[in-house]
View 1 (cartoon, chains in turn purple, brown):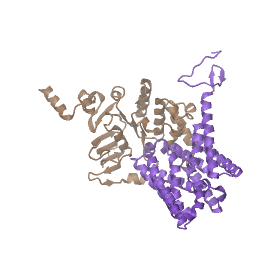
View 2 (cartoon, each protein chain N blue to C red; view 1 turned 45 degrees about the vertical axis):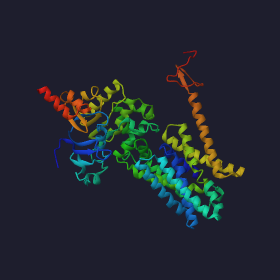
View 3 (tube, rainbow over the protein chains, first blue to last red; view 1 turned 90 degrees about the vertical axis):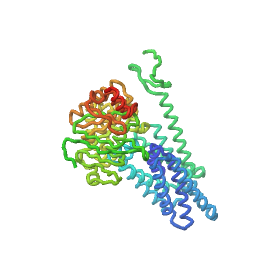
View 4 (cartoon, each protein chain N blue to C red; view 1 turned 30 degrees about the vertical axis):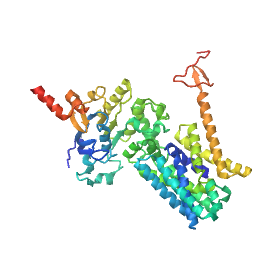
Amino acid sequence: MVGGVCGLLGVYIVLRGMSYIGHGMSHAVFGGAVASYILSFNVYIGATLWGFISAIIINEINRRNKIKADAAIGVVTTAGFAIGVLLISTTRSFTRDFESLLFGNILGITDQDLLVISLVSILTILFVFFCHKKLIFILFDKETSKVYGVKGDLLELIFSLVLAAVVIASMNAIGVTLLAAAIVAPAISARMLTNNFLKIVTISTIIGIATSFLGMYASFYFDSASGATIVLFGAAAFGISALYAFLRRIYHTHSHGDQKHAHPHIHVQEHQHPHQND
Amino acid sequence: MNTNNNICLNLQNITYGYSYHSPVLDGVNLTVPKGRMLGLLGPSGSGKSTLLKIIVGLYKPWHGSIEFNNYIMCHVSSKGQQHNSWFRSTFRGHNDIPSIGYVPQVESVDWTFPVTVKEVVAMGIWDQSGATPWLTKNASDEIDYILDSLGLDSSLYLKRQIKELSGGEQQRVFLARALIRNPRLLLLDEPTSGVDYNTRERILGILTELNIKGITIIIATHDITGLARRLPWVVCLNKNIVSEGSPADTLTETNLLKTYGLIDNTSVTSTKATEEG
């Protein structure tokens, strides 16, 4: 489930050219989680508050567009992470618990975590379902979308908030340091395979779910860290799809008169090579 | 308020710039009657695109007012006070309000983004085609019809990626996205930049046809001979309106030199003086 939602939202993030935002957001949220833990707050409430605040700050800095988004994200979120680390270092007794936050531990998931994950999944699916048209409009051509009345700034803010929610929900399972790959890997893998937007979204979601499942079982079997295993499966998926896309480009089906065939060749501007029947 | 029904667009004293104290547009006054096809001519940096963006509401002018079909769309007094019009606040997005179609410069969109022709045209009616990610039957039919009418066979083009198309085809897809909103006023930003002779002729033909159907058209261009000279009405812009009228009267050497900034107003008067002397 976590993998699926990450894969779904990841498409929009990657196509927005903001792959780094998932990485940043997860680090920022870590600070909030640690802080609320130490203040013996509910971790979710603390992390959510913190995540939403950093989402708003990143969004605002990004909108003023003097600084590139990745730089803005870098500063805001690393600061959030640093606060978390700082707080941990002052209260050493908790170190053990935070390891699951950092690197993920699927076995440590409670019923409450499951509930949150379910709710966030539904929220994300609803958001993507109803805002899909507006999202592709602002991603493709932001200026014209404003002319035609899409409230792009508001939508981007909501998008950041949904992302923060997804990050928080998946934090325990995958871990903040590894989450970025779980968001980005399925999306770029899917992007390599097709140009059709709806197909990208579907494939990405499926890859997300599949890699999570495989990763989870593998981590159980090999007794390895769940987050790391899932992420490695994601990376493998990307490698395979990149290889597939490469091979497909070389073994391109083409026809000469009646003959339709495929064999390795490199496309030059106009693909020409001798054949017996030509 | 001017209630002349023949006026499509009325700009009063529009001033706007990207940094303080150096306006790109300085007190532009322009009245466009309904049904006119107008070329906005000027060098790069003369404020053509900026003026179009102000008309469609992307930028708020420092001061000045914009009236469209007798609705005040934007009015900022010289003190910088803004009077939010009832039009915007009450009727924005209402179907009965005649809309403005905007065709941006092709450079302004993200070309790496994977969208099909159908999806791009559908963006024009994103608010009228249902809340689901797919389109209503009505909307789909409308998209087919519009594409066919622009000479893009909908059965062939609908599923193609926008980045695979030629410059002229892309331009027509963007035109379709604007036309599907049924606009009374159509603004195009450099529609013929980077396309070949045939494509330019084709685009000009399509626009002329649309104009005959009653759509008021404003085309920003820097192409003097290929486009501007062949439009019925030309406005030369460089910070403000240098001159306007039919191409024969407007595109004189002096006016063009003034528009392209090669001589300023003072030297024009001095050359005139020497000519007279």
